Length: 425
Image (cartoon, rainbow, N blue to C red; front, side):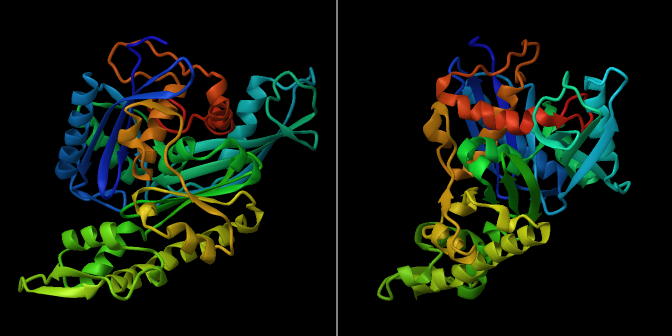
């Protein structure tokens, strides 16, 4: 693998901007060479509310990653999130031509037929069109139908849409930093590439990515994605709950949450106390650490109850056998998997840090960095280049990362062009 082949992913989150610069290796791993983070200003729940503040935050994170990697980023993959995201599973059908063999044109037509069945208001646009399965004359499970004999070709397709203006505003903030948005990618899809194993995807797995402003959901069954969604409750809500109940600043509340918070209050001793500073008066007061967790626990229960309800409405909750992977900065609370499993009827739950990394891997080893890593991985597998004028070269795959390539083939290789800029998503 050439040493000058760099890729970049930009996770534009509500709490922080995370930029990951990497270099694909000959063994298929991602060699992390630059990481930059900066608090998000001008964003709420994945929506730009102040373009200049958001641009400045992105620029600061990019600059930090560039200094570490000693390169200038010209293009990057950018994450899209928010509760404006919607999805639909649809089907299309075409009759093959006189030869009775499926052609690439047939594949394009059947996917377009399925996509066209999605009602799309003028203010929404397609972010991803992902083929879940091809069916030949009633026979499902066909991965590559071109050249096979059939009278009818059907396609089962997962279509993800979002609000056009929301997506455009995020992209404009990145472009204002002098960076080309090579692709906009739904964040849970990117995160899944970094944290989910092939075995989990085949069994059926739920990804719950708990960010600052939104919690993203992606469900996989029989090796393909079957549901994507987002809910407007996440880690910042826990922080605000603590601040309101204890009458302290949000900065102090965030510190208490990270240092002393647990998702299950019964795991905290009644004898442990911590000193807080009351906002406004500046008075010092001792509060039980258990109280912090008693504030946190019902909100975490609410998040996973909303996840459960969302999956039930989509009709996929009872199809999942492989368990739940939680990721994102909000997943790092102690006892989070235990409470999540209790709410989700005993499904096994694990925390998902990024996988298959070398180089500065320790700088992105937490679930908070999973989306940025996943975006860089997607750019690497697609052969994108973060450097202006550099020739693209796809990620090679060795035995150590065959599962990563398989996961990618199950997802991104089936993505059909949806967004502008002449690239598929």
